[in-house]
Image 1: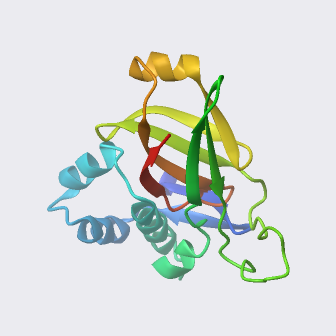
Image 2: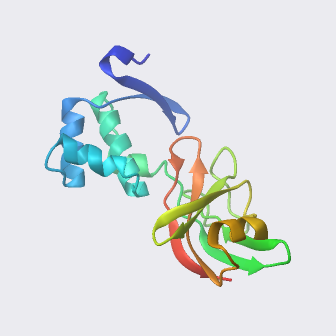
Image 3: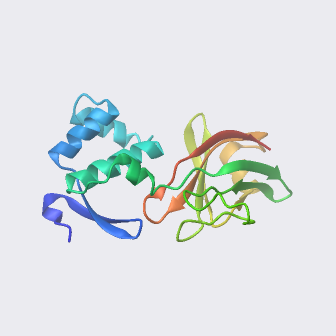
Length: 187
């Protein structure tokens, strides 16, 4: 059980409960990983919210090691969903439908299957629409496609767009957002 007075938390990864703790050693490891000169610089970097999936793996790994676990960054990354692939955008009368192809971390290379195994408790994705690198809207997907309504597009961009800068993440109950698929997708 986590000791909140020591700054510990519990999190579930890959069906197992782990303790995480940002000890002085874990914080020093994070400073080194992020190239921060001190804790203020580390906090400023994290506060910006511009973290890659690899950064999240590093933060989780350091917290696990701070609580005494022996998982490497690679072992934590193995719990992280791969980025989706083949994102497409098609404009219809109701708006733009984004669709994707999911990828699997394990058991996804069999030729006999029509679709690869999900590898997660549920199929869910988050699609971030960006403008000049800033988040405009996040669409939540419960399958391999989602409609971006024409009214939302007009509200967000002022007019229909010929393309979108996006990031898409497969979601995991264990680690949250997986590795991102980042691209400019033409409609």
